[in-house]
Image (cartoon, rainbow over all chains, first blue to last red; front, side):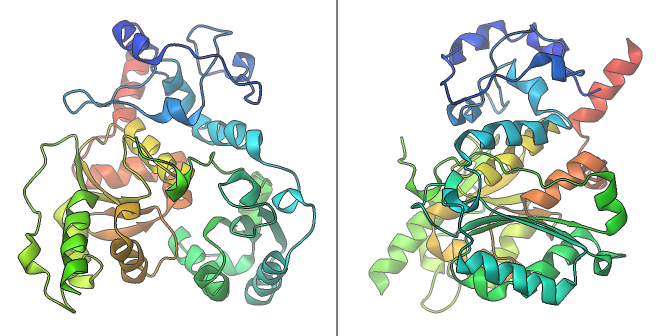
Amino acid sequence: SLLRDAKSSKDTTKVTEHTTVPVSPHLPVLSRSEDSISQSASGREICIRPACQEFRPRGGTAVTKPECEPMLSGQLVVRLFSMASRVCMSRGSAGSGVIGPVEAAIRTKLEQALNPEVLELRNESGGHAVPPGSETHFRVAVVSSRFEGLSPLQRHRLVHAALSEELAGPVHALAIQARTPAQWRENPQLDTSPACLGGSKKSRT
Amino acid sequence: MSGSLGRAAASAATALLRWGRSAGGGLRGPGVRAAGSGGSGSSEHLDALVKKDKVVVFLKGTPEQPQCGFSNAVVQILRLHGVRDYAAYNVLDDPQLRQGIKDYSNWPTIPQVYLNGEFVGGCDILLQMHQNGDLVEELKKLGIRSALLDETKDQDSK
């Protein structure tokens, strides 16, 4: 277990730095009952807003809101992503439901290069600071026996090579899950990406 | 051209962030950047950057204020492991750095993670390493003890 409940009792002074802000109606509250690992105050709102991901190091030691820490450990890093991203992620390609030319090209090229057993592709542009209908941010799960014996880095590079044109062009972000068929069977799921934090458009304070 | 080099020098200097450490040391002075060589995006410069520290990350934003969800994921993972002393470079501050590191690593996206001067991958790969325990091992090889090992120990001793 990667629980940090030992720390939360020490951090009472720091809790005031992050007063519990009302969770926006868009943000689901993480259900404690799902979480067998966390044992901190149940039913408490977990602030997963981007603002809560900012922290102020003190004397070189990073501090965070105590409630957030258990949620970041282990498997919950992934869960944090999927909860946060579901907020602004629209179903279908960039909200419009239409498969654009870039998405089609990505699919075709990956099919040709890797002969995948499974290819799940999602346009995640709708969750980012880009206009509707954009094809800039994608997540792909590629399942191919061609990945056997290759390190994650090598696998990702194969995917990049197949999509070099798109990556040099419109595609700004590409989240990759590159698995062998056996690995995919263990966890057949296209994850979701972390919430956008504004990118270069976010104004600096 | 010299005007833009001056700006490049200044912005490269601000791009260098020592988080958890006092700043200064290792910063190149403006005079080093001659035209056509030694720019903030050059391979010599980047080679030096990735080798200067055990853990080097190229982010959008800073560890205190990430400006990209994927970059933030890298920051959070390093925090989970108790890695405080790492070099973080904000590519949003420096377009030359932003393009240069993509060329240097032959990797099209940010964030990028280097351990011991070697390119490890982006956010997906770091997350994978975190989940399967490889990150703890890699940090151990660098002489960094992951905070998660101490957590496990605390649990075992209860």
